[in-house]
Image (cartoon, rainbow, N blue to C red; front, top):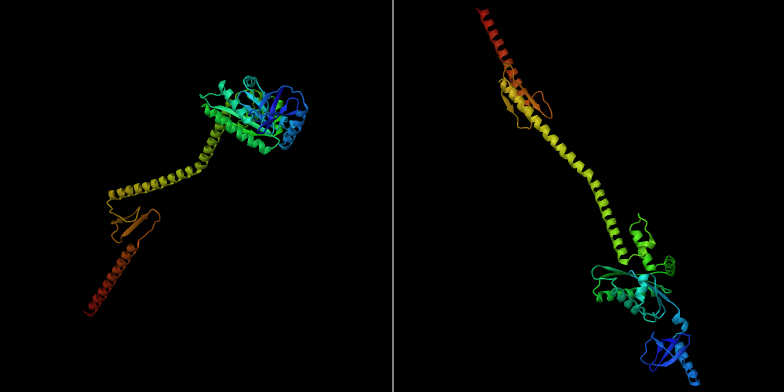
Length: 367
C-alpha cells in the first residue's frame, strides 16, 4: 500500500495512505510529498490511541486527505511533446498526463507524482532535451501555461516555472525561447475540447492573428512543434512590418511630390526670365548693327537693356530716341532743353535781322 508524507516532525511523520487514512510513522529522514510503501498494519490499542495525536497534528497543519488530493492548479508544457500536470494547493504533482504520442514517450521514463511542480518541470524539460527535441543547433521553443482557482497564484507559478525551464536549458547549453502565460479555467476547457493544451491553443491563435488574411487549420498547426509555430509567427510579423514600412515610404514620397513640382516650376520661371533677357540683348545687338550700317552713331545708356540713337540727317533739329525694355519715352529732358535753346537762338537772329532792315530803311529815307 502506498502513502504520501504530508507532515514531518522531529521523530515522526504523518502519512496519507491510499485508503484515505492518516497514519503516524517513525521519521526516517522523510520529506513532505515523498511516496513510500507501507504494509497494512494490524490495529492495536496503543496504535489507536496514537492516531488521536496524529489527527491533532493534521488538524493544526490544516492538512487533510481532501486538501492534498484535490487539484488546485493546472499546468501544461509544450515543446512538441505535450504534457499536463494536476497540482494540489501545496504545489505537488497529483498526476502527469500525456496529450500526444510524443508526450507519452517522455513520461515512460519519468515518475513525477507527488513531486514539487518545479522539480517535475525540470525533469520533463531535461528528458525532452535528452530525446533530441531541443538541440543546440537551432533555437527551440517551450510554452508553459498555468491556471488556478487563485489568479495571483497562477501568475506566480508561471513565473517560477519559466525560470526553472530557462535554467535547465541553459545548463545544457541549449538556446530555447520560453513563453509562459496564466489563463482561466474556461480556456483550459476550450483546449481540452480540441484535444490540445491551452498553451498550444494560445500559440496557434497568435499565429492566426499574425496573418489574419489567411485562415489556418488549428488542429494541423497544433500538431506542429512549438519552434515551428514561433518561427512562422516571427516571419509573418516581419513581412507585415516590411509592408507597413513600404506603405509609409510611398506615402512620404507622395507628400513630397508637390514640393518637387513647385521647385521645378520655379526653376522653369528662372530659366524663362534668363531666356527673355537673352532675347532682349540679342535684339539690342541686332538694332545696333542696323544703325551702324546706316551710318548712325549709337550711344548706349548705363541702364540695363536701354540705348539712344542720334540722327544727324536733320540739320534743323536734333532728335534722340530712347528705347527701354520696361517703358518707352518719346523724348528726354536733355533733348527738350536743346530744342528750347535752338528756338531762342533763331528768334534772336530774326529780331536782329528786322532791326537792321529798319535802320537801312531809315537811312534811305534821309537820303
